[in-house]
Length: 146
Image (cartoon, rainbow, N blue to C red; front, top):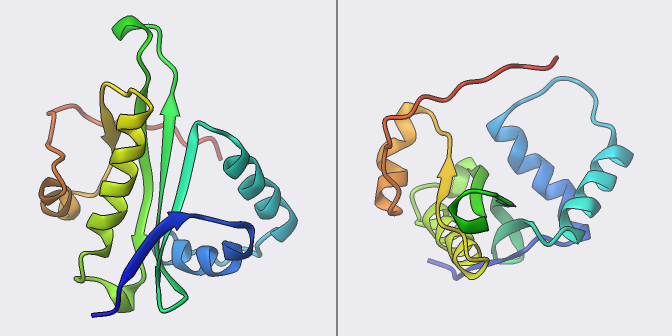
């Protein structure tokens, strides 16, 4: 197996990154590339966001996002939220997703987070358990704004 490199996303990654993210949430609507680039740049400039990519043979094969959220409880310690863990469908079952998770967990620990949370589909629970996460028994609540 070729070596997988996990690194911070950079500006030139946006097109490949969007191709991977489209595997998570396919959309038929036309992409506003200016808005996407602006959002990407804001995320990459914000110290509370960690957008990473997995790279194999100079090709992006996965991604993940960590958001450090400030907090008043827990003596002011932040917590982290993991989002958008996606591995390209042709590169799954190689341990790439776990490498992405471990990279983001390390970022959260360095930021002093007291916990890391994520939402996932039930079918993905075994994967996240292999990465060290566990079910809390809490229920996700959601309100769609569109």
